[in-house]
Length: 179
Image (cartoon, rainbow, N blue to C red):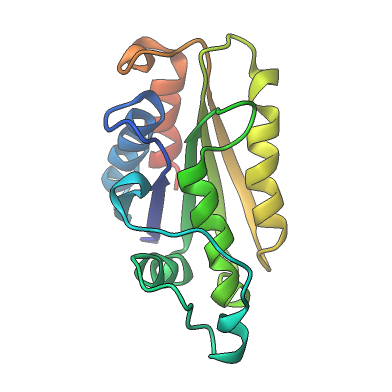
């Protein structure tokens, strides 16, 4: 069965390591017959949530007029959401965190999703990525019917492209094929 896959690449570096893993995941998912869209979050205009709760009084419309309404609709419509981020001080980067926080406008509509997580870091230990994964899991805990389907740990990579010859690169492709 074909699924709608939305990949949210939080990497601020186009072609960076987590972004490259997103491309491999996408390649695998496309080969499996899924409909796939990758959004490079850093290329979108997304303001941070100011907690004004205008969205509560306006039926889910946010007071900020930027690219987030379109992204949120795509999240609602997707069957599968892939969250990808490099590790920044043991957490996700600000670009992807802003997206997650802004889902508050219609968060109850983001439901019954399969989640995959992609994380990269210069450290060689997976343990250095656990807080980042926990940030993703914290969001998924708020999504009704969420199912964690897989995690890709890209360790020991810093310079763009270093991920290509690692086990995580092949794993991203294979995990995408398995969607």
